[in-house]
Length: 239
Image (cartoon, rainbow, N blue to C red):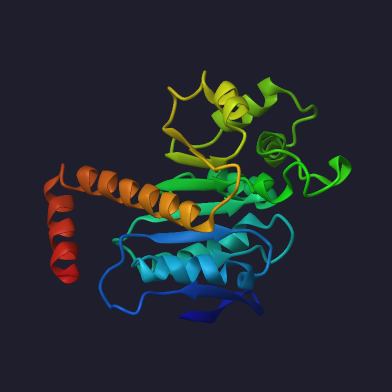
């Protein structure tokens, strides 16, 4: 079920879209889509994730590139789920906005997902001049680089916080080549779209990745006495 809650932005407010599971148990995570598109574009994906137990939200800037207004919405959400890991996600041309957010607030998310939409404009579906530029041509724009080349793209990815990053792409060879020499700095997972995109495959891969990060987060928690107690409390609430 989707709810739209007004979040104060000075004298005005911005509606924060949120989808929650029907079961009242603590979710395995909160997935936050970042972008200035409309919340309705995420309805199907968010509802499917909510059925898997996740909370899903969509934060967008009050004005163009206004990262602080998105941070206000994040803080509003975080106050509701203090012990639950938060993950970020962005699709296509929204990726630079998520990258800017992550660079400004590197501790807000446990992991981040970039979903490249080039599968929507493959050869044969659009003329070449109308094709969406590839994922790695877009990443660098978050950091105002002057030229598009492989080194600038790598520098942009290197400048991101050391959080786990999952990249959905159908540009496997190019993606692997660009990321191969920086993967030792952070966990980067390439999730490959089949040539004929299957939404069910994409959803299964996304859920698998989020659950894997959740397990990693639990492993980190139980290393300390306080974390172990917190996880034990969460686990009992799930049962």
